[in-house]
Length: 125
Image (cartoon, rainbow, N blue to C red; front, side):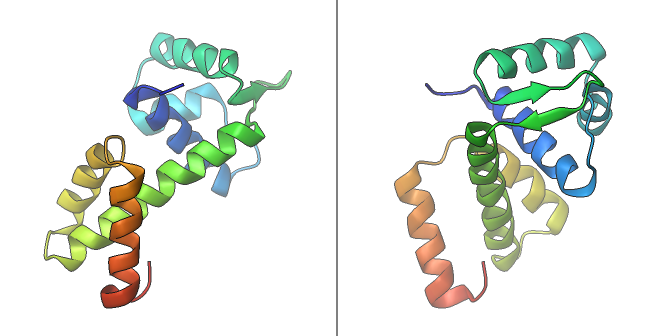
């Protein structure tokens, strides 16, 4: 089922935070994204219902296998698109912001074509 952009942003944020911490709580997600506690609580509930995250008794959020797969896909899109835009001469801040918007809407076919082009002409992904 297609996920809304906001759900993907939450998953990506949780994934990134988990790279640097064994325990990520809803408050960490809210601080990173600049969202209120009620907004984060609602999103966490939705992601749980979709089977993408679980929380333990301490409130630590973990990605399920399906959640991690989806989060990795979103994060890969973000990093590849950011690199592409920087390679085109876009400043890093703008490239990051634009990649964050594009990553949610670009088709799989277009994204795969971008990766193939970058491999052939742009070096590392």
